[in-house]
Length: 181
Image (cartoon, rainbow, N blue to C red):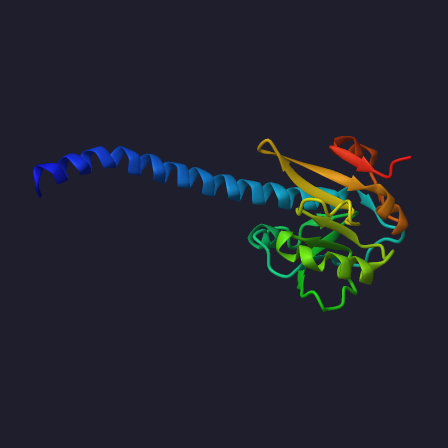
């Protein structure tokens, strides 16, 4: 190894270490954000009231494959709503939503939103997304990130059209509630 190569290696080592640490930190932040989003979904279910008690198991349907899939599988079997247990089911855009009590649609499925909402039209299915602007288009709850923090918006008008009600405690935590009277 030449003297110049040895100097370059010594100078590059701290930078490489810093870059690897930043990459690891970003990966951990993404995992934490995914776990937090899954926790939000779980709590949204807990603080929603359906017109009729949902069947066992409580079906959380996920449109397509998402970055949250690993975290959502950890919800499988957890008790919600007076002892019902969550079952996570992946559905493709053209599949039936029969049996779904909640539907999660991530940004990769954003192009499907109008079709999905048209097919659900007033059905008591809680719709949740993390895609910006979809609460304005008819999704009931939109998770968003603002200044490195997660929050959520609620489209109360659409939820009421589907005969779903949200806990007042949940609505107080929302960053914005559309359709509140």
